[in-house]
Image 1 (cartoon, rainbow, N blue to C red):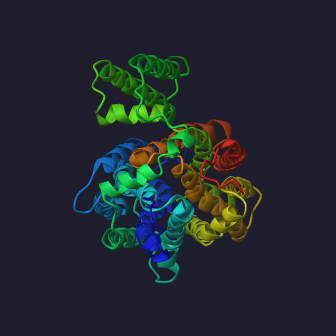
Image 2: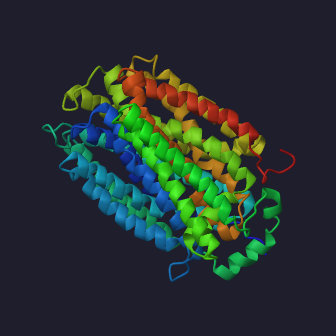
Amino acid sequence: MMKPRLHFWQIWNMSFGFLGIQFGFALQNANVSRIFETLGAKIDDIPILWIAAPVTGLIIQPIIGHMSDKTWGRLGRRRPYFLSGAILASLALLAMPNSPVLWIAAGMLWMMDASINVSMEPFRAFVGDMLPSEQRTIGFSMQSFFIGTGAIVASALPYMMTNWFGIANTAPPGEIPLSVKYAFYFGGAVFFGAVLWTVLSTKEYSPEELSKFSDAEKDVHSRSGDGTGLLVSANRFFGVGTIWLAAGLLGSAILHFSLHQTDYGLYVLFVGSIVFGLLQLIVGFLTRREQTHGGLVVVFNDFYHMPKTMKQLALVQFFSWFALFAMWIYTTPAVTHHIYGATDPTSELYNKGADWVGVLMAVYNGFAAVMAFILVWLAQKTNRKFVHLISLVCGGAALFSFAVIKDPNYLLVSELGIGLAWASILAMPYAILAGSLPAQKMGVYMGIFNFFIVIPQITAAAILGWYVKNVCGGDAMYALLLGGASMVIAGILVLRVNDVDETPNR
């Protein structure tokens, strides 16, 4: 029993919720650094304040993925998570721009990102659940379209509020401008409404139907090299966990006692190593006691049994998302400081530059929305790997161009290359991945795949502050250049990925 092909409007409805999800992410990406600086953050402190977002994703997504694989109720398998995440994220969007002090703003970012992740992760698995293999590229591309479309409006909202409706984009020191506040309020309403549309308009397959589909596609395991069902030995967990724990403790000790560093970003990196090691020791202990059915043990076993294609894509994702996180953190200070020559967050010139960054992000997201379906056509004519390679190289070149452009209007051209890369990053890796995953593990593996999105973001947040401060003399532009190099490396690594779903004639 093969999955039936869905028509255009069915795919449209099941993906529409991503419009709202991207409203949340776009408002976050375009404005959180601005909010942090307004509330008194120094430029080299911004990455560590952003650390909440990737850490939250690292924790939340595999848990939600595992839970949604096991869920079935009145709303189905994935939709309960869409709806609950949307409610919480909408409330967080209303609260974020009203943060009175910096530490509350950092906490609200944590809450907002956790809620968005609750909604987002099941949406990725939703495509694998609902669509046959030959429609997955267009399914993920439809998500890319809504991501781009939502971000066009969301990223430019403060600019639109000021220039179209006359709402003030400046405020007294320590206060968030009204244009930013109203943008977040509008985004919260759109987030909830878009996700509710998908919840009400799309019916999920029952567990019995999914089981029959899985039986029909059972050859995926042999093609992907999947080893699920096998238990990792307790000794392996103990050995690997000890190495990670020791590395984290040693790094923290060197940082504290020898280098006398107070860079909290690097501490976060080493503490993460310690936590990862401890978790593996716990899993090893549970495995030795034959308590292997709990979620923690299942997720770690699945992690060690990732399909070969997923392992290859992991490196591509690492360098891609390192570049994106560098761009999201440092575009505002790079453009306002380097191109506009403004360093005072309360000045009119700074806020003009910050508004323009919102427009730039709207442009790359808008171009991504246009390119989403063109990339599907290009992938059919060539293959998904070639399309992803070219897109990432163009994105890297676009980030390099920020260093030589002096007129902010010319940055619009650079955003086209970034938009091409963004459209491909949101679609091609997931389309390649979905074909290598066992159907009954779609949610948890999509959650684990998120490790290779958030780990590079944590790495970026941990080292970029130190890099910009100590190596680059506080010039944020060098973070964008490092991001460009990282994106080119990601493109090169695409060449070694095995796309098991590609037809022989490609």
